[in-house]
Length: 135
Image (cartoon, rainbow, N blue to C red):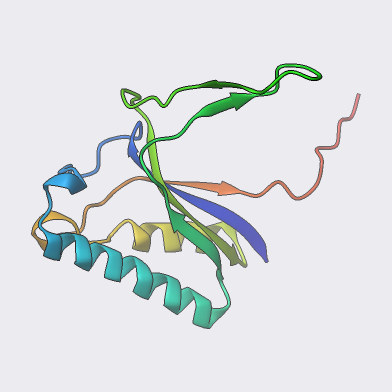
């Protein structure tokens, strides 16, 4: 089994087929989308493939270590940023093909009008061992 991170980018990724921002959806459409996500996670819990997942707030900060005895440097929030990671899910699956299959299914979550939004999801494997360097 290998762990993969599925990242939901609402900005910064290629536009989804149904590119209507969630803040313009009806409350029923938002509920249907969230219910789809919950049902998807519950099904993966039952199959042993779900590890964790969360939705993220749209604002955040950059933080950087600034040296011994100094407070961390912060910058942001960047409300104007072109990239917005709206949520993530960690899955533990047998293969990259299964991770891609599940990401494709998750991309079909309903949006405005109840239609699949066809959003792009980033699929990234967890680094499990340091790379081997051969000279």
